Image (cartoon, rainbow, N blue to C red):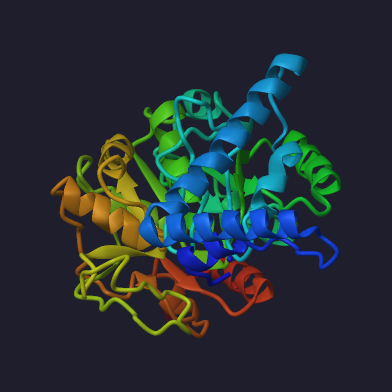
Length: 387
């Protein structure tokens, strides 16, 4: 499938931290103590409600700021102007979309759940490319805004393959927004890159590891809105080697409805170790095992699925582990994954380069971008790959 641990109760207590000066009059001090006692009493009586009330208050302030700025400028509000919200609650990690309209409450991101469904807008879009190119398969690559190196490596290797076995292949990179520091300078570079290559789709959510579910669902929304004339799409990470020939060959005989495949995990245990990158506490996700899901390194789907996954997402609470979340949506929609007879098609661990082996796989993680480039160049040399 690019982040602060705190309990909601601890966050609420932070609100009560008001400096007390010894020089206050006795009357002021007494009044202050009474206020604190009243608030503490309210807090302990409404322990579970305070975080929600606090979040709602922040959201009301946010919406007021949004509406005021929008009315003043009558233009799209820049997300950078509203990033103060992310530092407003001590000890928490916030990612509030600048596109949150009053009718669509995008609540702040918590440690384990993300703000989706929600209304996220496109800063950069390529809304007509699919209609013009009529692709057989669309390659959607989520990548950080500042990772130009990875985008260029893909553009010069497997992303350069536009026609494979008489089938059109289209490539798009999907970005969120960089953090506030250095955002404007980086955004100008991304804009120039977009004007040069016309392959960047950028939305206004904060681009981070804990927001990968948002990025994935933005991909689904984009496919549903702008690329319904394609037959298949593949979401593939930027550190992957992709054999487009093998992919297209597999899809020649694949179903065109309710089809999703990749390296499908079944019976995966939910990790309860707080030190794990993929930790989910039992009180947030009570099941001990995940439903089947395709590992986020790369999976393929028929183009009827984005709309169905978007519908499923309305009924499933969004966890930050994006591939698991899609598995939950698939389960809700009662659509099974398609497992591959050849388990070597998709590889989560880097496969040592071998020309014959690489000619038969679809995707594998790589140790470096240079390895990715070298492998592709060698595979494309004339002559049979297997001796």
